[in-house]
Image (cartoon, rainbow, N blue to C red; front, side, top):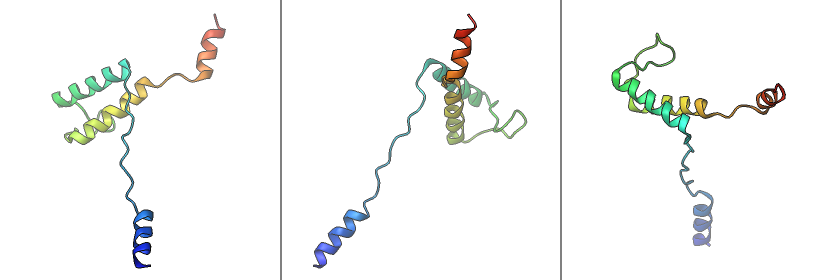
Length: 88
């Protein structure tokens, strides 16, 4: 009885496997990531706006680069696409 209870507890409390987050892979995204890393290496990358503090942490640099890349590679919405094709 004790073994069955322990087995049940183990089954219920299994740690979840870490999943990899998808990152942008398009040409625009890659270019944006390169640009951000170049800025950081030159010491010109700032957090927030142009007046914010300089970013020195590698983790922050990576987070900013991926965020900007997602914005750059985002597809235009269907409404915008429809307007462009209907105006021809």
